[in-house]
Image (cartoon, rainbow, N blue to C red; front, top):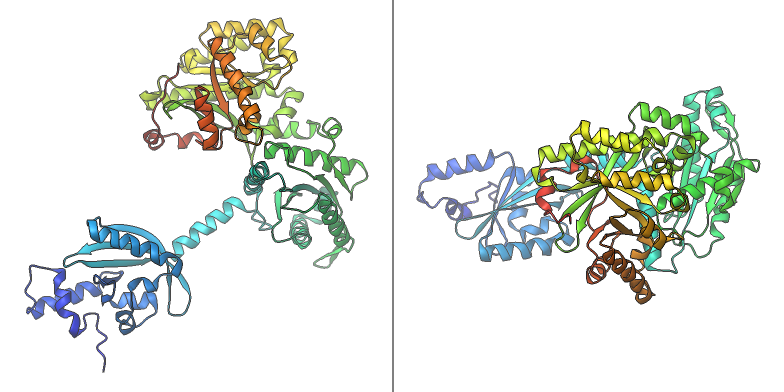
Length: 590
C-alpha cells in the first residue's frame, strides 16, 4: 500500500532539511512540520535540484487535481504548467539557483488533471540544501474579474459589441499598418438605423433595445471574422473591413446587409421593419488619424440619409460642407459643458537630448455618457461654427492653468515645466482674450512663463492685424507662442516673419515620412525647417513621433523636443503623479 501522506517515509529525512537546527531523529518535530505544512492555506510543493517534487501538501493535490503519488512521480514540477511557459520558468530557476536571486513571483497557467486550465500565482523561494519552495495560489476568480472589467471597459453593455474606445484603437492600428505596407487595404463603414427614434418612442425602449441587439447580430452575419463591428452610441454603428482585396468589398457588404434587412424582424409579438443609411470610406490608406476617417464616414452616412435613406454613399469631399453641419451637436455640447462632461488629457513633451520632461500639451476630450471619449476633431468644428468655442476655450485655458498650478504645488520639480493650450482662429480674434488670460493667471497664481499658447498658421490669421496685436501683447506678458502644423500652410515663411513665434512644431505628416520610402527628400525638408527655426532663435518640437528610427533621425537633425506615442499617449491628470515623475527625468525648458 503506497504512502500518500505529504511527508512520505522515504522523504522524511529530506523534509527535515527545511530546518537545519532540528535533529532528523526528532519525530515530534517532524509531526509539527507536517501540521504546519498542511495548514498553510496554500498549495505548497518542494522540489530538489533536478526539479522533481519531493514534498507536497494536500492543498497541492486538491488544486492540481493530481494525487500526491502522481505529484511525486512527475519528471519535473513544471509539468504542471502549460508547455509554452515551462522553458521560461526552468531557465529562470536554473539561473537563480546559480546566483541565489530568490524569491520570485509570477503568474502562470496550471494544467489540471481534468484538463481544465487554472490561473495561479506562483511564489518561488530557495530553502536549505538547494531545495525550491513552490507556493501556488488560485487567482482564477481574480483573472475572471479582470477580464470582466476589461470587457466592460471596451464593450457595449447592450449588444456585447466592441465600443467606441476599442474601435478607435483598432482603427489606429490599421492606419499604422497601412503606413508600413502600401498593399494593405481597409475600408470603414458608418451605419445609422433609419427613423430609430420614431420606433423607439412609439414601441418603447425595450423594443428599441431588442432592435439594436438584432441589428448587431445581422450586421455580424455580413462580415468575416477578421472584420469588426462596433456600436458607436445610440443607433449608430461602425465597421472596419480589414485587409480587403479590392475597394468594391465595402459595396458587397452593404448589399448583403440591405438584403438581410428586407425581411422584418420579429420582436416578441411584433414585426418590425427597419432600414439603414450607410456611409463608406472605401480607401483609408491616405488618412493620418482615425478621427478624420470617422468624420468622413459620418458625413457620407448623412449623404445617404439625404438621398432617401436605406442606401449607401461613398465619401466625397463636398459632403463635409453639405452634411457635416454642427447644429446637431450644438445643444448636446452646451449641455455637456454645463454638466462637466468635457475633460482635459495631457501629453508630455520630452527633450530629445535628455529624454526628460519638457512640458505638457492640454488636449480636450468629451466624455459622453453611453459613448465614451470623443476626440476634439469630432466636435471642435461644430463648437467653432456654433459660437460655443468661446466658452469652451476659456474653460480649457482656466482648467489647464489650475492643473499646472496644482502639479507645481504638489511637485516642486515641475516649477519650470509648462502647459501648452491650443487656440483656434476665432479665439485669436477675441479682443478680450489677453485680459481673460491675464486675470486667469493672476487668480490661479500661475506664472506666465508656465503657460504656452499654440496657434495654427492660416490665411485668416495672416491677414488680421488685430490677431497680431493680441499675440504680441500675450508674448509680452511672458507667454510663449507655438505655431502648430508648420509647413502645411501656404505662407509659412511669411507667418514666421510677421508673428511673434517662440516654438515651431513640425507637423506629424513630415515626421511620419522620415523613415519612409522617400526618406532622403523628407529628411531634407525637416532639416530645413529645423535650421530655419534655429536661425530665428526658435525652438522645435516634432509631433507624432511613433518609432525609434524617427527619434534617431530627429536627434541627428538637432531637433530639440518631441511628443508622440513613442514616449507617452495623452493621459488623464491623475496619471501624472509621483510614480510618473520617478520614471521620467526633468529636461531643459530652454
